[in-house]
Amino acid sequence: MSFRIALFGSHYYGYAMLETLLSLQQQIPELEVVGVASDDPTKSWVSPHKRLWQYPHTKTEEDMVANLATRNDIPVWRARIKDEDFYNEFTKKWMPDICYMGVFGQRIPENIWTKPLYGFYNFHSCAGQVWPSNTGAQAFEGMASNGEKQGAVAMHMIDNEFDHGQLIAFSKFFEFSDQETVLETFKRTSPYVAKLMAWHIFEVLGIPYPQDYKPRIIETQDYQTQLRQTNTQL
Image (tube, rainbow, N blue to C red; front, side):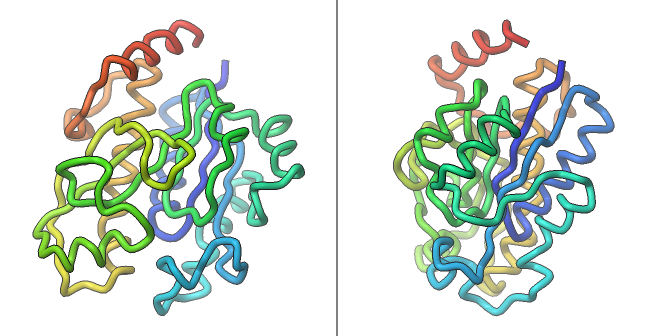
């Protein structure tokens, strides 16, 4: 029985996540990456003027996730997702059991984020103490202005607000430096996103994972109950 994963991601976060998924496929035969949705920064609907795409970057960085997916014969979507065509693609072809998102410039509509049996999760960088915190497109800028010396990645469930849904876990802390550019920080911290996603996949599938994958977990009763219920359906 396959475990179907869809990725919504761009830039170095999305690339690290997709690389990790491709690597995990070698360890977990039932894992299948069924589709990738990625930013097209030339389009207004990803709000490129408000997000990381406003900073100097290369064409390679714009296309790196889509190109990696294409090289591995994974379907790619770079148009609007709040669209009947995407809904049909998502529900009739991709049919994911779970979705992960990191650096994606479109709000996920409720008729999409409620579909996957195991949930739809986002990864957002923040100071790593409370959630929600450092929400919005300029998390690193906010951390710098607050004088933060360390940060972390929050893994949270998607809901109808930006950077708001139930917290699942914080990654381990990373050193934060306001001497780096925003894009340099995204690149350096991308392994924290990928490792947190990998931990969650192991957790959902009930597979032992390396100890250094274990994050600073915030376990809620509701989430653990949901996990036990869905695990029985595998």
